[in-house]
Image 1 (cartoon, rainbow, N blue to C red):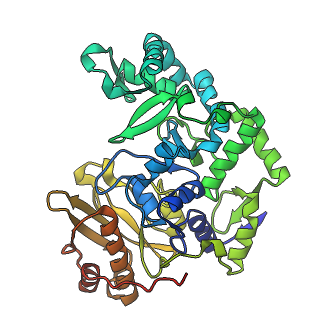
Image 2 (tube, rainbow, N blue to C red; image 1 turned 135 degrees about the vertical axis):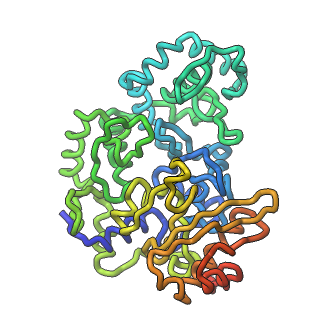
Image 3 (cartoon, rainbow, N blue to C red; image 1 turned 180 degrees about the horizontal axis):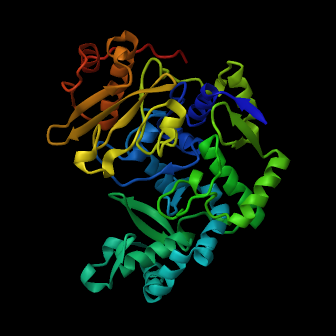
Length: 429
């Protein structure tokens, strides 16, 4: 068993997720590399300034532009999206996930009932897909379909297509305004991946995948894993509980995973066995060469975290950073403390502030609605001011905005720096 302190745990999780010590990937190629490194790219349809998945990649990839992940997934076919907890996965993992898809069909009561209740529509959608090649739920008018009350769709055609997607018969061919356009799996995935892996291999893979995604994982079970719970709390997506306990013991014995004790945390955590050296190096003050930033570090230029970023979402910000972060987008206006789409600000290896903003598309102006500091002294910190200005400058370019409105920033030093940021010296190549 390894024992580490909270500082090492934080650096390890940030580093494995590509957020520290700075961006280490670039452009289209780097986008695919980052998507593999972070294990799951969670997708969310909401677009206020940019969608969560694009924000997540912007914080990790230099020269990232919104939608680059879609090119990697739907044009290059390097990735596919799937799951009740919607996330993108590498295409080469498909044989393992086809085991989980089959279990969805056979063992997930909600999915099984969906297929049974809309059996005629399922047969109809199969036939239409064979005939047309691609199909979107928008292809079917409400007046021609049976109305449903499911949060997964209001038409029987929507639920039939969703059922076929969850059980692996169809895949997302591409997206139009984020909505899935479906195609039969054999027309999307390479033929050599249209198989199921060995069941035991799939169990080990799925457990290891979830632990890798967390970096440090409790591998606990959630009561309702089908309602948006991430892999870290669903006790291994697709792995039955009675099998998971046995598989974890075997993986520990084989060294595939290790136990890690974090000082101050009550629960024991697991990490991938191959990460033991990383943890020891970090404990000795060594930063892996592979983590070296291509340009600026997060000390020189802050990074803004997506509201669904795994290092800070779902209460993890409080545990790792002592930063109380709640995504307030689903809270009524009178209950919001900060703002509708507030994002955490990473400086160095700590979350030190948050900001709310909007993109005024009529004037193409990025408007900062407020910046809230964890410590008042940051408002007069020259290094932080420069780092904040550089972060917002890159963010404006990422959004494609032509103007920035920083009047809402209360601190004069920060407001001036954001309005007229100074560029950091680029790292020599």
